[in-house]
Image 1: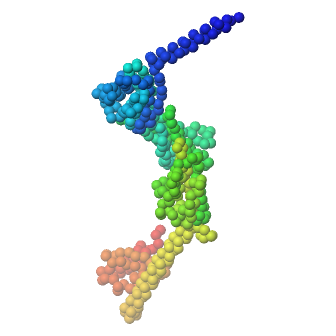
Image 2 (image 1 turned 90 degrees about the vertical axis):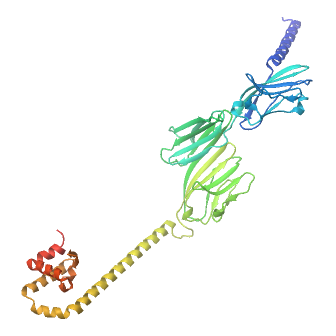
Image 3 (image 1 turned 30 degrees about the vertical axis):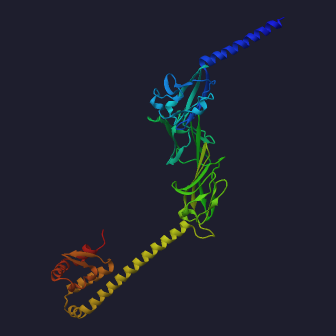
Length: 450
C-alpha cells in the first residue's frame, strides 16, 4: 500500500516545480500574445508591468529593430527605425498605471512579426511578447461574363489568396478554369484573377461559384443566367436571395442602373426608369410595367452581404403587348412590308406614267409630223421598200423593243418606221443596212439572243 504522507509530499513538490517553471518562463520568455492587425489601419500591441518608479520602456521588433523607446518621462526616438517614424504612440497618461501598450498606425505588410516589450523600473524588469499578424481581407470580388467565359478577380489581399470554381449543383464533368496570383511590389499585397470556360452557354438551373479566400478571410460570388419570354407589358423578375443583405443593385444591359438599395437606406430608382418600375419586393424582385420592345434585354440583380454576392442575369424578351394587341415584332414586320409594297407601287405607277407619256408623245409626233409625208411616200415606194417596211413591222410584233447606237444617236426598234427623225448620215447607214439584208439587220440589232 502507498503511504498517504509520501503521496502528499510528492504532490507538493510537483506544484512547487510548476510554479517555479511559470516564474522562470515569465522572467526568461515573458507573456506571449497574438494580435491580428488589418492592413492600413491602427493596431494595439498590449504591454503591462508592475507599477514602479523611473520607468523605462523599449518596444523592439525582433530580432533587433527599434520601434519605440520611452525613458526619463519622455519619448526617446533617436534610434527609431525609419519604417516606424510617425506611426507609434504610447499612452503616457496610463504609464504610471502599469500600461506600456503601443499603438501602431497605418499597418503595412512589413509590420508582421514578433515584438518584444521591455519594461524596467526600480522594482525590477519584465518582458512580454506580441506576435503581430497582418491581414488584408477579401472584401470584394469583381465578376463579369465575357462571351463564353466567366471572369472573377479580387485585389489587395494578404496573405496570399486562392481562387476556386465550382457549381451548385455539382456537375459531373471537370471545370475548365485558370487562375493567376500577382504580388504588388510596393504594398506587398496580392491580386488574383481567374476564368472559367463555359464550353458553350450557361446551363439552365446551375449556379456558377467563384470562391476567393486567404488564411484569414474569404468571399464568394455566385452567378446564374435565365431566359424569360413574356407577352405582357407588366412582369416581375426574381432576384436570388442572401441572408443579412447589405446592398441590392438592378442594372439593364450591364451599365444602366435601374434601382439600388443599401441597408438602412431608401430605395433609389433612376429617373428615366420610374415610368417602368412599379417597385421592389422585400426579396429583391423587380416589378416592371409599361414595357415595350425597348425594354427587351439583360436585367442583372446583384445582391450582397458581408461575405457573399449573388449575381442573376435575366434575359427578358418582350414578344407582345397587352390586351391581345399585335406582337411588337409582328407590327414592325407588317409596317416594313407595307412600306416596301407602297414604295414598289409608287415606282410602278411612275414607270407606267412615264411610259404612257412617252408613247403618247411619240404617237402624237409621228401622227402630226409624218402623216402627210407618209401618205405621199407610200405611193411612190418601190416593191423593195414596201418589203422592208413589212419586215420591220413583223419584227416589231415578234421581238420586244430594244435599243442600239449608230454613231452618237440612239436607235430603237419603235422608231425605225420614222427614219426622218434621224440625222442624214444615220438615215444613209440605215438604208444601206436594210438594202443588203433587212432580216439579218433586224435580228442582229434587236433579235433574241441565241
